[in-house]
Image (cartoon, rainbow, N blue to C red; front, side, top):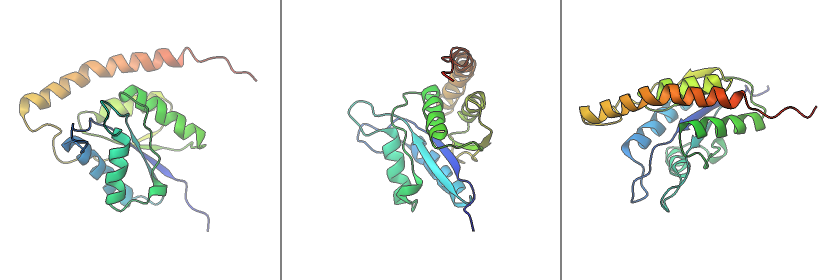
Length: 175
């Protein structure tokens, strides 16, 4: 019996702590993705995010958490170059195209970040499935929660503009 098509689950990164451990936000995103993956028939996970300040990459820290949580290493494809959300969308899209994936893509991130990630992946041409976000807020204090929400309000139209502008400047095909 043939295997069902693989469902990629892109896990958007968050900064790694100075002691090279995952931040609370990063840990919660990975946990939400792992719970969702266990409910899927044939998932593979794409943790995304680069290394900064001599620390391991966000993707590496997430992959280690996934493996410690029982995910097979063969079900993880790390993307370690992206410095921000838009870079992650572009890099993960390239990985998916290179693998010949044409189906939907699941998106795992925090609740405040999910609308922007879904919009950008849609603009990149993917049908998106939201992974239920972590039940915990990304920030414990109310002012920090509002900071992140307001940051998204500004980032969403800016990243959309950059994504649309980039689509209009693709090099011509050599066919």
